Length: 320
Image (cartoon, rainbow, N blue to C red; front, top):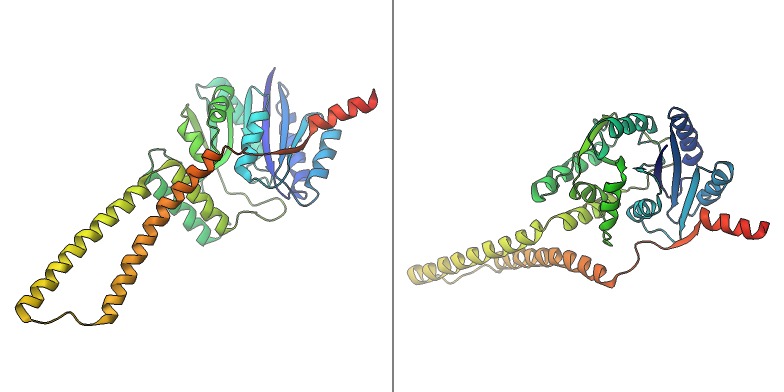
């Protein structure tokens, strides 16, 4: 019997958890020939998420949980889930039902019957999403695919089902600064894409603000492309050439017309422009340098505070 582990990151999702569990029970009943492990990862929630998870684990042995000592972010939660998953196949899925659990049987069938190592999903439309957010997301995918050798499918979700070989390859990339969409594509393996219509959250509010999405996009750009560093170098060269020609123009103008350069406002504007470009390029270098600095510190990607396995061991000791 095949075992499927489903990794579900959770951050303040006490309202969504019961709804998600109910939907997953329907899906699991549709797949009688498989064994399931629902591995919830509590990413340092401040609400009753952990209490709800403990209740699910007591009621259903298929449910397990990991609880972080603080909020480490979704990427850390995904990594922790993959590292602790025991299944032959491993799925990653959001708890808010924006990743339809109903696709799981078809994803499993494809891996069983066709020559694929992974089945991934992407949104065919962004209906219901704010227009500015949709525009920024699409622009990011287009920009990312132009500057990086790792192609990321537009609208790609973290919702996918993978064979154990691919999971082990992803875990082999134990970098501190993680961008899973890029990592999944970088490791290779044959992937089939399934499209679905955009679905709203079943409960609660999204934790992804525009600021967080922007910082996450920077993580992807700096993690899978060095093009910004090249851009900084090119801009520097162009401004050196421009400055050289401007010096020639000033010299010729002074020799022929005897007109000294006048106009401090224009000079001030030029100084501000060049200084701004320098700071921009320095900032690009700083982004890469900061990532290198964090990697060299070798800090853990996550820290566990509690888990269902620890609860079981404690319960067994008390029973004895």
